[in-house]
Length: 227
Image 1 (cartoon, rainbow, N blue to C red):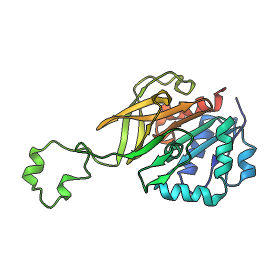
Image 2 (tube, rainbow, N blue to C red; image 1 turned 30 degrees about the vertical axis):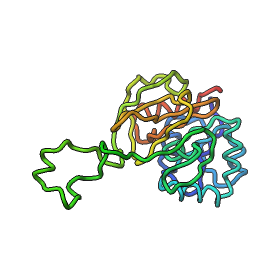
Image 3 (tube, helix red, strand yellow; image 1 turned 90 degrees about the vertical axis):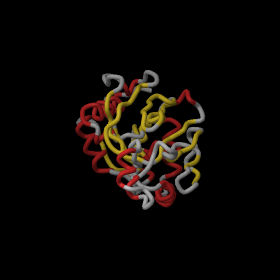
Image 4 (spheres, one colour; image 1 turned 60 degrees about the vertical axis):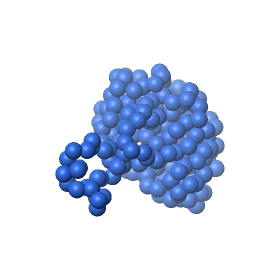
């Protein structure tokens, strides 16, 4: 299924990598960056990426003049959120204590607790000998390849085996108030939601454009998604 696919360009996100991956996955589609309302509204499908700190992302989206257009698109058009783009769909983020778009009920939370640490060796009161004998903590940000369990079937999982690896880079994760919207989960210190979906919206914490074969397959599935 071809058509116009707009990547929301509000100054935050790995836009050109997303664009290249989409073009590769769907060469017949008209893929372009949309930095104004008219360009966004003429699209058949919307990709909503995000990268960086949540306060900056929300501020840039507001200042770009695209916020209301994104909300209108989320009401009716197929929309794929990526990384912070997934987080921005929630109601509130602990990062900067800022309100988000409120499309899904839930909170964006930081990886925190005894199972997480940046680096024990950076703590001045911890000797090298102590480090060697203590359980190695997980580092924040969560960075690298992790398995994704498909919590429930969805068209965008088509052709992607359950527990496939995808590439992550993040310090915060979504905690949906409604567990029914969780369609993908990953374990890092604890189990967390890494993919959400409802009606015409699908969003992921990982980076499909950095996730090799199955990331491209997910983009292809989005292009063919008939809501």
